Image (cartoon, rainbow, N blue to C red; front, top):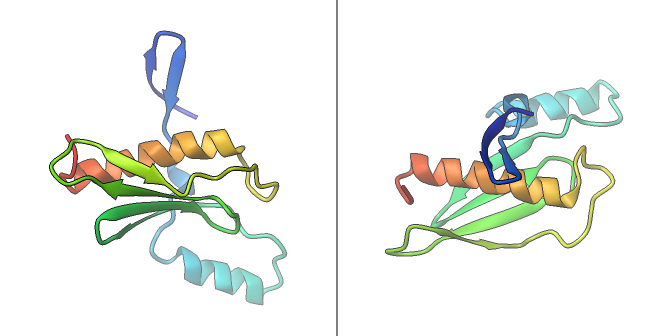
Length: 114
């Protein structure tokens, strides 16, 4: 996974681009199920719903929501996963880290934060 930046001993990572869901991914998944595929590829999905950004991983219980704070340059996280999901290709903490970066990138695209 490519490193975005290093801060002291902490490395910040970006989710691999291939894991970001395209608009046609759900249709592709349904097609795979019809053809008998037993497990679906896990993808990050980033959605904007009103004043919050939802990040989830398909076919897992991983989901996080980041609320826009009016007149503030940050996002307020909610729905933080409390357990690892064995169906996911990553652990809970890795998902939380990647979800934050994806939500932050989307918020910057929407000019919610700088």
